[in-house]
Amino acid sequence: MSDTELSLEFSRESYSLSALQAAAYRLIGTANCRIEPSEAGWTCILEQPSNAAIAAADIRSRFLIFVSDEVMRERVETKTEAVRNLILALAFGGLAASN
Image: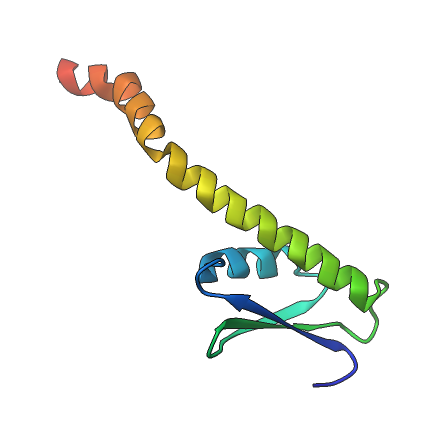
């Protein structure tokens, strides 16, 4: 690993691959991220560009914030799925009945 790389470990039980990928996507323009499977879960390797205007510690901090945000978005989506489907059924149920 070079001086411009950070390696972060995430467990499969707590962090989904899709949450890590979404967080990595949000870092585009700031850092590059490789996500590799590891024995314990996932290893995210953040590569800081040589011309980066942001410190490596700040990149790490942003990435962890993005990961936490994406995990919470997934949890909210899962918990509200039934209500969302009910609202959609009520909103568009009349269209199906009229055809």
